[in-house]
Length: 517
Image 1 (cartoon, one colour):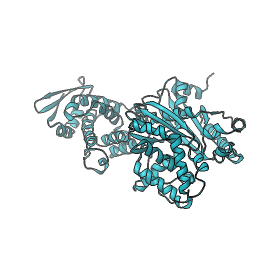
Image 2 (cartoon, rainbow, N blue to C red; image 1 turned 45 degrees about the horizontal axis):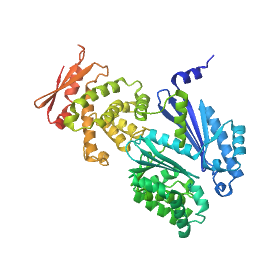
Image 3 (spheres, rainbow, N blue to C red; image 1 turned 30 degrees about the vertical axis):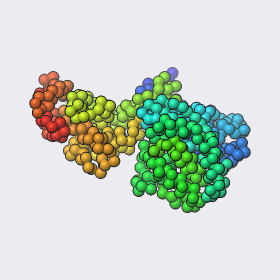
Image 4 (tube, one colour; image 1 turned 60 degrees about the vertical axis):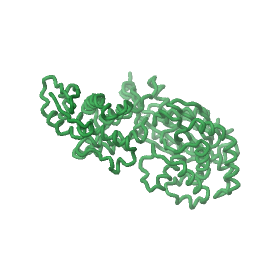
């Protein structure tokens, strides 16, 4: 007889865990996944164990690092039980992959923790990183260069329109390069020259092929790269906040790399934004990332907080439910709406009405067809701020959208959705407001157009009872007429509210917006 827990898992989804036994750290992520492909991370844990310390030069994992790793995995297993995890997948990468004593280490983990660790190839590591980054950022257009600087290996993936052009895993990780080349603190000029020469020999041709493809940007998916982006933001005086989607210019990366190799460990600890647990690896990491940026010609480096572990979650999702996690955008929006608005009938009704208005006004407003999807997402999420406060719910909606883990979006797209949701009531967003200043002029106008449409669509469901069943839109000289169909139900409240919300849309259309019901 099935237990209630198993029945719930079968019908609704499951709680999955992914463990990455890496060259520097052992990580675990725990996430809830549904049959529809929605993923919500519920816990993350990391222990720095340094399995790669000395192993890349000796060929063996040290007793100390193996002990630390096993101890960490024992605790991870306990956390997985407390969190009622249904499935765990654990993998080991470069340090374990190359160690002569890996077999007894894997057996010990199984014996003492019950966790079966699979040693994966560099190619599989690159593939899983790509799967995670595509889910998190979409990777349309491009080409984009995925860069993951681990302890033992460097993964590079060239992606165009969401599809990998090539994938490579190179033995150029930060711990490996530190042990082999940068043995002094700070490293000498001679050591840095030897490292640069080695990077050129191993990766130069590959990166020049990326330059020839005219790479639009580099996307970093590892902790060391996230540290570099965090340092760039600190250098600009920005609050760190949510790192996913944040960026650093190639010039900023170059300056940070220079600071990392000229300071000793004590001085590096004082550099703004640095992760003090990575101080000894950052000179090599900075040199590697700067080399990748220079040789590939990528103008900026974007942080992606999803990587190997999240790729493992996505692979388990496919195995468990028999489908891929495609359309991450729609699923993550649905998950966010569900978290704060439940079934969200009002959001769905406003979205349907907003799309009708979009289709009728887009040619006059100059809105591209590709932007229609963003308006729909703004409509679905415009009221989630009610979960925090009613009177200023539009501002809270903005905050929740900006700080949620919405996957498959570019940072500017998230800003557009959040700003449109914020502008659906009271004052419309001003083109010169500080919140909009980082967007291009065209995207600022898009926000105002979306806000104008949302103000009308929201008003047409003022009671939240779905009184307005449908609308028709037609033009007459100097006017846009919205014909309201309520199937003989009284829509007085909706009409009254809507008449007070058409001002912005009228200005943008340069014609009077009128209602007929």
